[in-house]
Image (tube, rainbow, N blue to C red; front, side, top):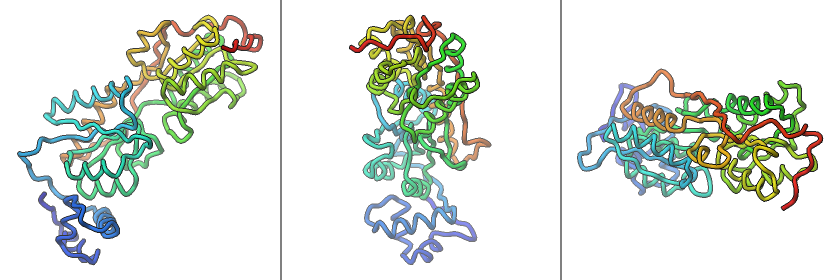
Length: 350
């Protein structure tokens, strides 16, 4: 790596302010592990404060790559995003390294150490996030990162690609209201997940805009996977006054609701209407086919890859935060309620 110097900031300036030698600063810049944590953090903070950057030197022995980091791999949702990243990376002659956070939404220390050694062109975080210290370490080494489907409320300077989650929640709920449903359940993800909060906010806006009092007892928080949809679906359907429709925060959750309905002897859409979110391939395969909000997952991944590659070249795009449009896809899982919600019998226990 070749350092860029300016009249105000050089590697020697940073070394002097940190009270260390120039070789120690170089070790930090090169991702070496033989620097005490406190010293490394002090140097990284100074690098961040000064806006110090260095130019990448060509490395013919190593193929250019981007790191793609997921909260959890293995779902159809993740595969759509992988396809989008691969499409753009392949055309750019860039390899993709896949990683998984595991239990939490923040990558492990081992991943960061490995990434710093690999020196990727950039990092794409999917439904996961970086701790402030991890961000500083990447920034200090001029490794840009982009977040897809941000988990939290990111600051304006963090590049991110998402979708119009509020609009999606609004459209899904208005569809059910238009069919005559008045008691509509909602299953989201954890309360601290930004995209889920936005979908629930859209749901609530549609409910209240229709003159219906928002009932928090009809809203559940869990995760975006099948088991969560099944568990919370059973819970909602066994209320004394169960909903006649459920808006699930993901297609995988909707599959869990399908399972819960079968176990309780309910038929979709005769006894229960269901709407999902994402429009995965499975939405067209399941029976009845699933009404859902189409989230442009591949396009989100493609945009994120183009953005991180542009940032790696030193470009500064006019916009580094995008929310792509969503649309409602109506299929067979929604219909008018068989009877008004306030007279519908409770679901049968299974």
